[in-house]
Image (cartoon, rainbow over all chains, first blue to last red; front, side, top):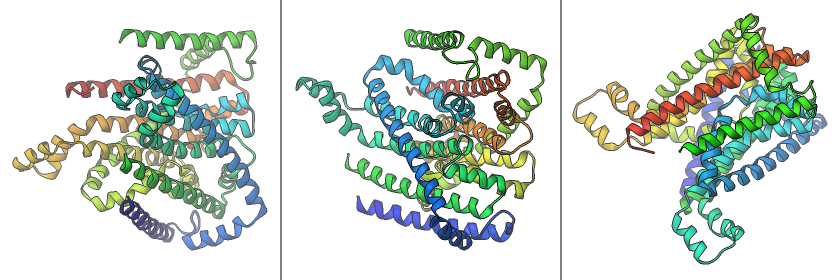
Length: 249
Length: 250
């Protein structure tokens, strides 16, 4: 267990160093027109994160992302458990989910804007549709792969459906469900940000979009760095937890 | 086998009819969405007049180039990474984070680097797709049975020959899974970049139509993109199934 987490940590550190070196090298090649060096970006980030403007946008994005993630997890898990428990339902609906997963969802943003209006609800919806399908698909597979013996034992013991889910299916399928949640987390985040970029007047995504429009390189680099650091930290933590779950089962 | 397919068609038809009824009855107003039959007739009219054919050809052509680059670069680098255990372990956190990074933030930099035109858009599309291809190809390479590799070594095949004749064919179903994702991601990259900044292409036309409340152009274009991506994906999925069936899997 622990050596695996240690190895992950070491790999992450190596990766960070490699990325920093590559970034600096790219900066030397490209120059000030379109890029800032890691040090300049850090300095600007330190200054920028202490402004009240940043705090307001951050709060907006966190709220949208939190809501979207909550919705994606709840809806995804319910779809996953319902379809995973029934062979017939999953036969009917799983290919539809796979088809939905593969469409470029970015094209749907005008429809969501028209349906939900400009603001919080449309970006939450955008985040949710990105995250919900992978969570559902992973949960379906996870629930279906639970050993028949466990389920039969549950039946013999006369468990209620709710007990069956809480005491048998969830513990047995947890590592795989967690893998789905991990991917759902990333996709919900990028979905929320894309929603903010195209369909919002507030939030980090909007800030990024306006920085792109104004060619404010400092701000673009800072926001990208902050988002990448956040997403990276969360992903690595979730990955470590996931490895631990797999190791235990 | 027959009945799930039938059910799926019935459910889809039901949803479309429901949408049609809601639109015609005015529950969903005209500015939000047009009834499905109007979208279809608009699509045919649009394709027949050929007014937007240039934009469609540009977007789909760029997406195709981005897809090919993502596949070639992805599969080749996966083969290389697969042999280097340390490199692969180091890249693992990157693969886990990659799809949460807003790649579009690099679009302005790419425009400065590669100039205005199709190149930055293709770059973004390829950049998005390549990691999905790498991850799935690695997954496939992991599952190549050791005995095949030993046979290759006994026949003294060169590394390139081994890759082309043994490992890649063996991993092909998994590579196809990556290909399906790469199709979607190359479209996302191209269209997203066109939304942000460009002077042509389907993404540009969609956002232009959106800004002008021109639903008669916007919905057919969106439908066309969805139809293209779903049909390509179904084709790849069918191919994947054939490959799996040939091996007696599934």
